[in-house]
Image (cartoon, rainbow, N blue to C red; front, side, top):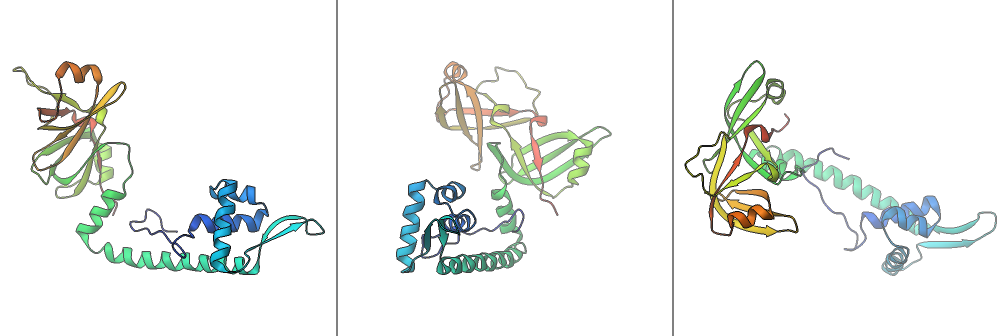
Length: 264
């Protein structure tokens, strides 16, 4: 199995027999128990019987044989036909992996598409993820600062340790992703003549309000279409009268931003 694959595919036989079904057959071969096999493959006991019966109808021959005792003991075992199906499935899996690996090698030669796939394949709890290009890097004895330009023209400033910047091998022109938790974003609707120290201040328009039991998620659309999500308390939501269509500014400190770059 490939690590951190960019391309994946769901393999099915006859449009319905998938990896879970063949995991059920494999578990049956080793345990001889429908109940244990169903649990191992993620089926209910009834669900396992239903899919096995459907498979037997598709195969038009028995896939299971039941023993009630004797020198081999009781339980359910696979027939030769079922074992042949499992073997073919394993070969199909190997061939699919080889095919996907070959196609992935081709995709990686297409920079724009490969970068897009990498960004989508990243799994993180941070609601705010912005792709851009490093436009400036300043590395000092202890800390470092990087500026990332978004395609829409806005910039995001990131502060980190010098060690982290060196580990990322940051340099101008490098593609990167900025990650910001929604709880780190403060929404400002009126600066009242004050200037904030936070380096990142992105102005936009509120486009979404999702009110929860205690807190709410506010979506702020920036010029160019990028979306910033902020998590605010319901008290703050009511106090500021936040509503769709209202102008606001998303404010977050440079050290609240995590930067990710693709490994070479």
